[in-house]
Image (cartoon, rainbow, N blue to C red):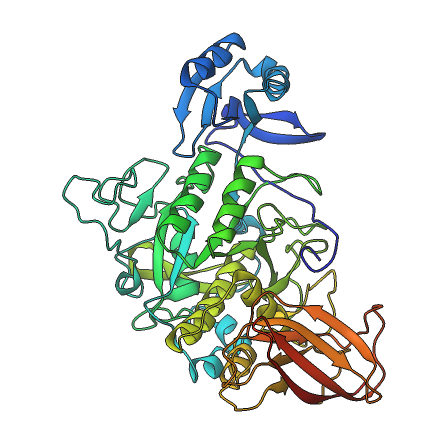
Length: 523
């Protein structure tokens, strides 16, 4: 699996514009991709002056159509018949960092013709399946955690969403850009498609996604996290497609710049394994480095390999399960898949205040976004910090049902909100104990991994975990990057499973102190 194994998934970017005549198929890095007809995204190097950029575009017969807020990135139009030639010539120019087709992205909700799941208007089975009630006994969500929903917009007047809509603390509607961000009056987010401050939903997909993640559950539907804030970012048009890939790129950039903790991306496009979009990749990596947890839908083709951006190493890829806890027949699987969540026949919010049932991996991703929000709410309320890699780790080890190994059909397993929150509440992230703890103890490495946590009295950050046999032989040495806990998979340094028995662990911190304890391994 990507990030845990060295296989990068197939990118399956589904693209298209409003009319078929506005798109074309082009060769891009050895693959045939659908993109806006005659349009390229060109990223100039920062030291290239404006007049030289204009000369380069003119030299290749292009015309600048849009200047992005991303430094150096512009959209240009060229002769569609010569697009591939122009793209290659631009990429060979030393002033150009890269050039690529303006790929089109589509939402991941399954079209109605493929929906054979009976509508469940009176029962949100997905919440019960992920053990949400057990999680709600511990945490129901905090208004201090923000989920950016990059989609077709959000119905901000829906009775179960209106109280949870994010409000920009640095803006008010006065016709001025008080924050200096380049967005005027972006009080409730931004509509990147129409370039205005009203990200209302004109499709329904974004409202449905937002409801799964964070509907209040007061009148129509409940979400996973009842009070977390929804940052509405409209980057897909009324048909659920991109007019410009730049809209998604700028939305990701906006979310990271404005304090989103989680970014939900229930859309995708198709590229073969190992191929990525430079412009989208830059935005995703930048958001990850800013501390955002990025979550995306795996795709609805029922094929091997997940879609992009789900296949990015910085993104958690989510597939769909049905009511029988089986992989939904249309859910993509295999390389790149991280975990599963309910996605077939999911009832959630609809524009104009109602509800509707939809199917797709688009519906699965916000379940994971909502559970991530519960975890962050719990940690923030207790003064703990986190890194995206840490949240990902506990999601895939403690937040799935029946965790053992990664499997092509299901990744690391189906999302289990109850198990994750119980793990956190029992000290799995930072213990209140005066002694270091190992959890579970004993543990079976064929089914789970052990989490070993510093005691409350230890104020340093972890540098290293060492595992010793009863005879004092070092069997495992793991470097840690400043966490309060470490994870042991029950293996030796050579990768083989350790024998059953009692082991000693030593937690070494950056300030030179250490704590020790015992852990039992049972196979």
